[in-house]
Image (cartoon, rainbow, N blue to C red; front, side, top):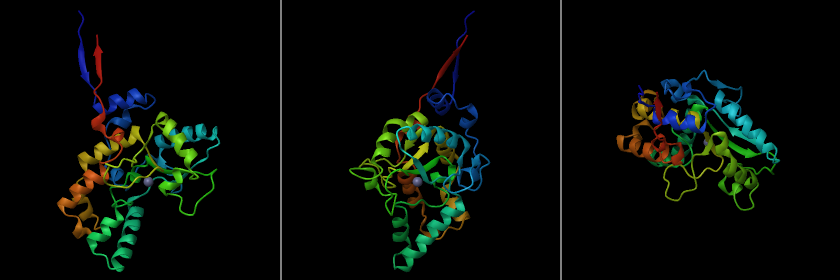
Length: 259
Ligand SMILES: [Zn+2]
């Protein structure tokens, strides 16, 4: 007797495995701890410096992408990779102190900070999946992470064109795209995310982290400004208004028929 058994695999694991069959199911089980999601420790992070620390699966894929780019005379250099909660807190609070001492209100200071920097606990760099990259074979401008360096006659144009064509083959997607309708963080042509891990991490983050509670527990400077309305806007614009390919809702359900 023939029996069709319909098994629903989570939308996420289905498509991720279809695109990246080399990754095992364990990365798609959504078993991420609070600490892993907010940058307070992750046993899968390897590396010994802020430019080399990444999730081990990210690093493996990155090394392959780097080797492929090297064949085109592009030397991919990581400017920033995994960043801990503590590091992000230092960055955020340094800017907060600087802006408020210049006379900005708490709210204005925070709005200015979040044009480019995240609130601690909410950075994709906490996951070890996201990297900021440039081309070390190109002339190095004084401030490397500027969009204009990646366009026109900018030094990182060659890298940008190569990434546009090849990065997704290795699982890396641009996060903060150049889409005029996108809100949240500004365009970052240097910031790429390793989708097979970052998609389930974002999903898990959405399901398990109460951002407002987390920020008040962590006693972040400027905490009084983090109202429900602010957190709601920050979540929908800064955390979720990204390249739609990095959102799990765009993933499909796989059907497996067993006989
Ligand atoms: Zn970045």
